[in-house]
Length: 337
Image (cartoon, rainbow, N blue to C red):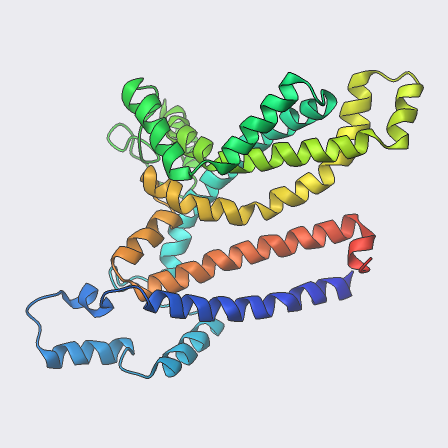
């Protein structure tokens, strides 16, 4: 197991190097001058402009800037934001709990609906329910997040006025300290009546929008895995022994069919974080995705570079954990068979 862990860990090194290079190059293709963000677009002399370029290291050759960027990353220095003058790591850690909260709730929504729906579709293979579920899951997987989010806002929030449009909580009605950064936990700790329910109401629409794509994937994967398991000999033996359908399907079949589903859930973390960029922008959710979009508009090189690398580190770390868990469960994986 240790050899397998070291081998998987070594494979992440080229990924990090490629990420650093792609991030460095792609961000510098964004039009605009980052110095203008710090000093303003008008009323500055060429000498002062050259001074700020030297201060930010933008007067160095590109290859030297890249080496300095890599050296700082290796020492845990993700830079200082040009627009806020705060450390990028500090801003990321402040905003990341909001993104985690949204992603976890979206995944819970997807799992809670996708797994039972996929299992029932497998049991009722070929029925109208099965065909309808597969059609809906394909539609949900193919649906653009920005279109789906705006559609829900238009009908649920604007027309029906059931749920709020943006934010994490009504800041006018509720004000309290946020020691953890997780709004659902902080509202419970605050003791203010109605704060928790208001936080849940703000979370429902973004979680549904972000969880729609994973829901479709999980439902289809659960159905495929269940169909494979239901044809196994031990399932037929359990039925021949006279066990109840609930025990055969729920205990014997579904439990064994969840292994590939759990793997897919872990791998869906990357898509959740990518989808969070659009979802947080649509709903003005103060998370990492919204912060990165604002950094693009401000040409904030350090915030973009550091933010992308931190998010990528989280995704790679989660994928590594999923690989290790899967290898621990299935010895054939870690032995290369």
